[in-house]
Length: 343
Image (cartoon, rainbow, N blue to C red; front, side, top):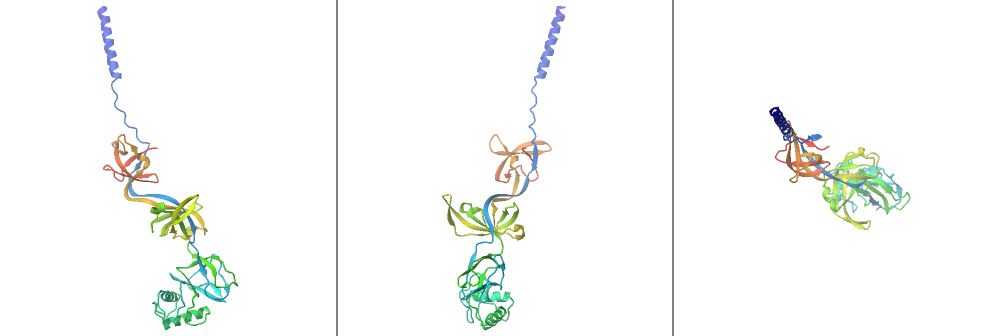
């Protein structure tokens, strides 16, 4: 009986040892949890932008000063548009006419004259349909004949000479702004102001942000009703202007943004707007969501590449960050691969 009891104890101990070893065998390491979301690596253009304040309007006004003696007899309505060959206003019942040119006429024009102002006169007469002369920079007898026809059509004395002050010049059609004169006033003085006839956005851009503006660059204009309209940087001022705001001096340059689709601007003639300008752009780069980046223990960032065989983490180099996305580069990366994204 004693031997039988000892045998039972030995068996029990052996079973216990086997059970202990079985329950304490090292478990295989748990697999890293899969990321909650995924995204694909894409190749494209990444653009960083900044918003600046702007003003929608028709641009800076230009004042017209009367140069012919007489009495103002008719004036245009504010907000009206005047085009080539049309009357800006009337003096002694006769029209002061708009021509398109880059510089004002500074003298009366007559046969024998030559120069850029003669070339501008003849270009406008040609555009208005007058013929019989060569459109160059020489005021000939044939030019004088065309001028007489033009004067006859306007009810002017047919002298063949263009009086100084009979023509107001502008680069294109104009919009009448503030009319300062009244019917019956002396015509020799300020009469009215005009602007361009097309709405644009003016930005007083801080010189520290001048890198944002490049002629021809795309810009987005956000109207007061949150409508976004496509625009383009048209001009950048060459002269910086200093002003004092909140006891601090601010130095700015004027930047204009044009809008091709004027209808998208609605009924706004003037309004404060926000303008989105491109600060930096990277083309033909690999792009992922910023939330796809994981911090590596050795420093830097990596991505979790998801494949049919599982998931692995690869180190990457980061570039431009913009709009919740980031430029990435690495030997293991290619467009179309799937990466993990944090929730």
